[in-house]
Amino acid sequence: MQAAAERVAEGRLDIDPSLEKGPREFQQAGASFNQMVTALNQMISGQQRLLSDISHELRSPLTRLRMANALAIRKQGESQELTRIDTEAERMEQMIADLLSLSRMQLNSHAERETYTLEELWLTLLEDAEFEAEQHSKLLTYQTIPSASIDGNGPLLCSALENVVRNAIKYANHSVEVSFSIAGRELKVMVSDDGEGVPQEMLADIFRPFYRVSTARDRASGGTGLGLAITDSAMRQHNGKAEASINAKGGLTVTLVFGLINTAK
Image 1: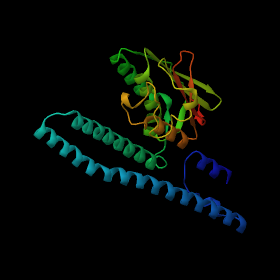
Image 2: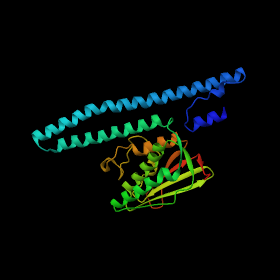
Image 3: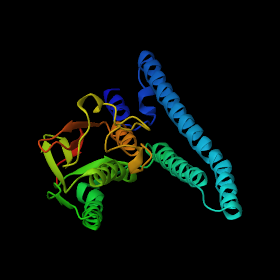
Image 4: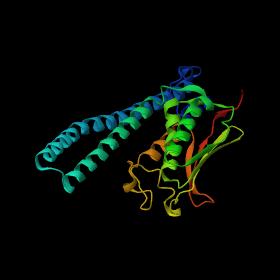
């Protein structure tokens, strides 16, 4: 029962037939536990399918809106109002795409779990981020990835770090630093930028879906406000957490804390 409860805490919502063996009282407790796991699975799957269906249905009227706007521009010529309509429609389309991506990852996160080394998860991601930073005349540095492994959903684990790193590149003035530390079975991944940071009272809110800070990290800089929400969701599904703080350079540091790392080589 303890092992089954720990699996659920790790996000693995699988029923365990062995719980329904033994004395009658144990069978009843095991059956109730398995019913709870089944109900959780159905609830999570239903919620994610609803989100996916809503996002999918929104795409059709949005596509028609953009086509109508394009026809209006062709007939009447460019105007500030029509350009604004197209900009907002494009932003909404990106938001829907992000929602669909989030719902798909969450829907498959419990079923598609494997063991990955940290290097095979994140090395290519960091190399690509280093190149992306160079294109924006910024410097991204990262420490050697520790020799450890983790059980989880690969795409979701990649998205967790990718969204934080790309966010840091976007808002950094000059540099981004990615560092790792392991204590026992706990891994911390810290992503720090030297940008304008976030007001202290808003640090806990930046992981909320669609939340934007009314400073340099606002709507004018683009984005849908879902990147860090996807990171937070991914961390929760892997028994971890995401935290934000202000660093010594005045920029933002996002720390991803994973609690079940296997450090055996």
